[in-house]
Length: 355
Ligand SMILES: Nc1ncnc2[nH]cnc12
Ligand SMILES: [Zn+2]
Image 1 (spheres, protein in one colour):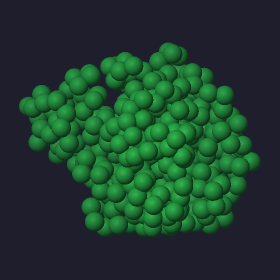
Image 2: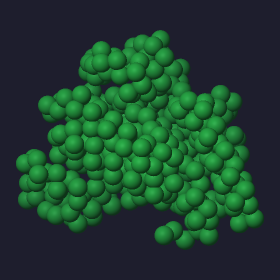
Image 3: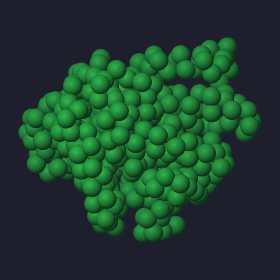
Image 4: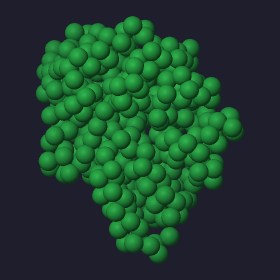
């Protein structure tokens, strides 16, 4: 339990999560269990002692030095996911945890190329994730969307193969997949490499987002917006380096999906208090708070909310505004948004006077 006196109010606050890599919710214990069940060899622990035990791997996750250092473990980790049922269990466990943290709507990333390149069919991945989404909605009323992410360290041709597979299966037109995103190593892989696929997505009415301004400078954000027509920016913390761009993002109400604990673990900032939360609030930048890869970064969404509260001491009114902005920036329909907004209003009424 975190130390903030607002803990129960933050717990009860109706939340939307927009920045969650489902493969990043694979805990070391599940990783070892699936490696054994599926007979997937893990790296030799004489070469990398992190793989000697669950606790050794957990300990290693405390010391990432950069995004690329983390990605090395992230891609090894997901190699244990083989069957549709593995993907279903992974996503169902994430939804259970998100529900317990007060998430009512989640938009989750998946990395199809990381699976197809090791022989796991795109259809297998989506079948498992969709089954979990259905169960989460039936059991808890937790609505969700899938966002197909392209790995930016791979070519645009490779991204297009993944994209065309989803198009051919009708996954964008039938709503199985709501949108596309861009993740993996940022610096040296600017968004415009993928402009053709993003342009096609825009023409087809497919929603678009991209990681930008995590390790890359503010120009990555500007290029994602102008050359890939992204409607959201994932991370976006380096927006503060370009005052004009920041004002534009505020004016255009572009949602920035922040991930505080991730930014500290990957050393983008040294502490949560160094993130531009106060600046974004003062300038009217719309943002949500998210967990990114919770099994790797030491916390799920509520831990991230609490970390922000401990660092910035926000008021209930400010949290209400953040929650409303997160709903407005979601990709669910207007009916669902209305329901979510009314729950935030009920929350504000219930907790008024607490702080
Ligand atoms: N924080 C992050 N940045 C870029 N790519 C990712 N893939 C998973 N987590 C990521
Ligand atoms: Zn991310």
